[in-house]
Length: 215
Image 1 (cartoon, rainbow, N blue to C red):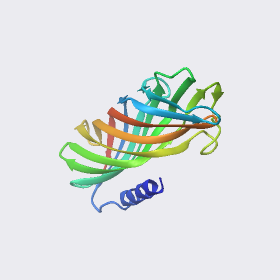
Image 2 (image 1 turned 45 degrees about the vertical axis):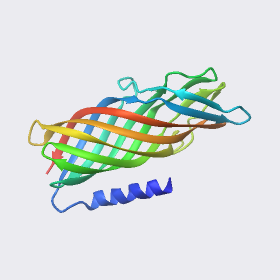
Image 3 (image 1 turned 90 degrees about the vertical axis):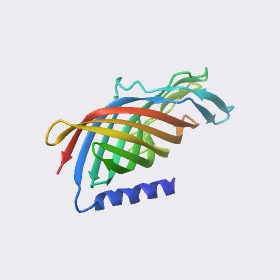
Image 4 (image 1 turned 90 degrees about the horizontal axis):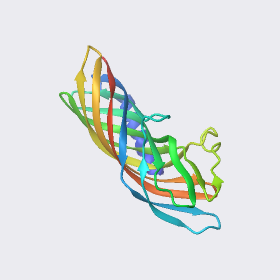
């Protein structure tokens, strides 16, 4: 985890340094995601370990919404970006011991991206951390949500990596329509009452929204 955080800080410093000649861009994207099934393991104090194949939905248009916010600078052929993706996970097939399990106030993917730019297109890789807000009840025990960062229930839960491709359509001098497909993989451990749930998430994301170019 320390290595991942260090890498993210280094990439963020590179973003702030930037090239002498570059355009800044700001994007606010919406969309949705498909999540591959993954083995989940739940351990609790004085209880047998639970292992099962978890299936997650995202339900992007149910509050809180799924979204992505990115700030980037772009040179002629390369660029860097800082990105916050508000992903969501809802367990669709809980076993009898799990009354509810979701991460909807944010399976947040905080990441830095390196961009390869071609006319109208960009390709990128990303590396970062998952900042999760788990909400769950397991074996009748409900997780307290006033812990973690600022006592608001947020916790750094694991690393995320991935990549994608985006297409931009110019609408005006400063406004573009951005369309993007990305793949992310993360592996996390999130709190449950008296224990921990661990799993991976492999997700395919489709994003669409406005992109503002600041010269």
